[in-house]
Length: 108
Image (cartoon, rainbow, N blue to C red):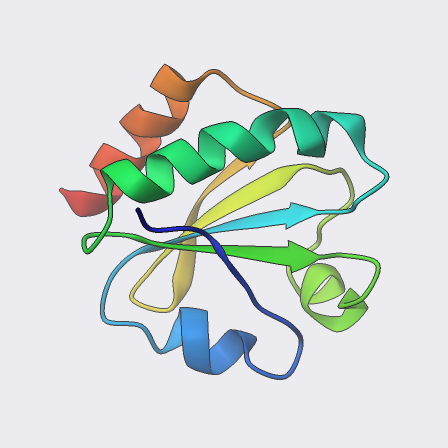
């Protein structure tokens, strides 16, 4: 099963922005309870969309440049990138069905 990969300030551009497929990026921190709550849902979605959408996690405490660059002020924040640009932002722990609708829209 596919899993979300950890990306950082150094490789974010190469992994996410230069990808030929859409990417869901989970901006999170280990101390954030809602972040921990949504993590299993992200992993499930990574398996379901394996090969079609990439999944990445950015620890905002360890990678402030990327988080600041995308205006992340609250976590968890999920950004869905397509063609190297953010197309959808979801703030807070959201139901799996809502996230699936956003991912399906990115594939359309």
